[in-house]
Image (tube, rainbow, N blue to C red; front, side):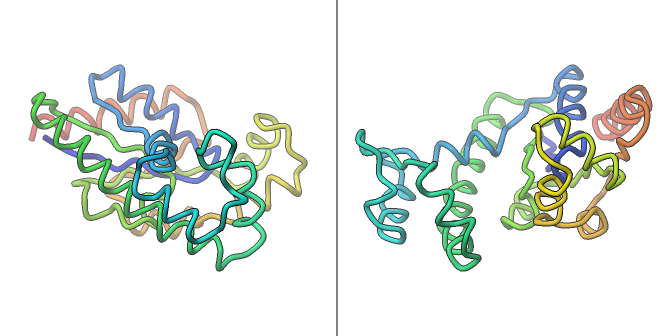
Length: 198
């Protein structure tokens, strides 16, 4: 089984590349969904988060209220680091569990889509790193249009992440999605076929 880590900045075309991979038969694991799962009551991160940030982040049903947690962690870098140090290792545990299940189902290619693949320390659990990259100006206009953000807000979001160059240092394959979708699709097909024919 080959495990691909797919990463890239916001609005860089990860979902598009993922769609093509799914069409080719790859099994996909969405790190965002797993990220949501680790907050759930009964998961180890749940009590650790309450311990770190207090009862104010707990909703009436006992679940973590992400809307209350958001302002706390986005306002303070130290708080954000604390959050990540709790959530990322728990995500890794669940991701590895998913990989094991895929292995037992004899999946050939499994793709972990994770915007934080590099930052969260998930590099050591994948075999290949595929990075989607996009011209900064195009990313800003795509993000503004897609999320209804001002240009200033879009820039702020993009600048809070790793740059294309920082991600590309870890890449086995880079997909520049600035241009035509067909070019991206053809490259995905080529790279996928290379993988499974080895």
